[in-house]
Image 1 (cartoon, rainbow, N blue to C red):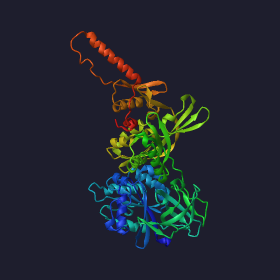
Image 2: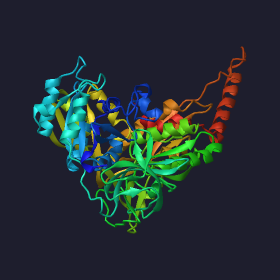
Image 3: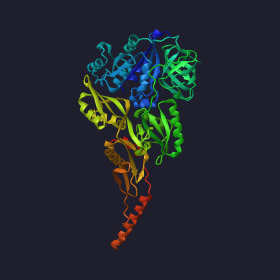
Length: 592
């Protein structure tokens, strides 16, 4: 294919602004997919994506339009997958920025625009949903002009649902976006912007060829991981796989390899061939590290091996997933899994339950902490129960994030109060037309459980939030342990700042009192820091009226029976076991 006839672009937007619907209309107009085969959110192949109405896995597709090859990448919009989005942008020369005409610019819109500007892409602003009664075209147009510094004429006004104005978007892609640069005769370099594992074919790479060509049968090498493999098949996606003889310079397509896991071919890595080898890597590659951890335990210990096998299978196609075996005295054997964020965790949990028919107990999500010991050793702990004896610890560092919240100006006060409550610090406040952009920094652990829900509550649903990991900072952190009937439950232990520990201990003890069922004896639920108890709640015993069979006679008979009952309860308290329900381990996620 002649390079000047190729256009590589992606669609970026906030969640639910119409990315996938616009992609559907483009596929219809270019006749890439026949009308009878068309369904909504065509590129969202997973059932989960359709149910949640969000894009989880990006999807490339090649369309033919007016003698041009248009390569589109439909990117995920959620903050957890921002690294994938950045690699998709690196594979393109242009981006179609979709903004909802009724909602305006949101936090994720800004984050993706910054990524696109950093990648030097041509941005085509598109105003979607102009047919809605709530659409406010002049206001949102002013926001886009403010953000991008473009003119009113540059903004395309469309309705992706009805197809109005979509052809103009395709024309703008051809006119405004530059064709790919690169040298066909140079050593081969191709960027992996996604990879997944197919049970029957091995690892399949989605790549953008930057220099040279990749032919069927070539011996390929990943520069960062030094893994070698064979290109068993190459071709394009439209959107089904269409095999070809080679992938030329500037083209986007797939490579079927004989690799066995995506850990050998990570997103952002550079592919080269033995035939035209180079050691020069494409810029921007980084190893994605998870920073949210949770323990996954099967309800029945007999299912442990099934859980382990299922997680191993999922990790073949998700290189960001990291896991290690974990053992808890209460929950038995399980695995501790690392995720990119809470949405990533939700998706993996649902896939394990649906695709592998597992009943799971998931512990409260936590982040990782860096611990410096008095001996000079450094530790990286993934759960509070791993913290060594406090006397050996010199300092504990926790991860902080840089966040951005976009809200209507009326809600600024409520949002600032929420940030302060989470131990955050506001760093900047700026205005985009009628919206306010609040920049802040905060400890990640405090935002893990219900920060997003609270933000939606205090802003009546208008607030949107985006964040990135900043650094690790030394803080006065303590470990809070929880005891049920005198027995410490290690899976419930959490790390917290000393200033918040009393309040947190008290609130979790109260929540545990609600979820743990009553027993035949009194049960004490306690929170402690080291050897000092900071909160307690007593779960009262079931009371059986043992005097019902007595009638008349001396009061001493009654006292004798009650004393016998009290003695039995005392003995029960010494030897009784409390069965802790699975809801107790996700008590942090419960709203007050």
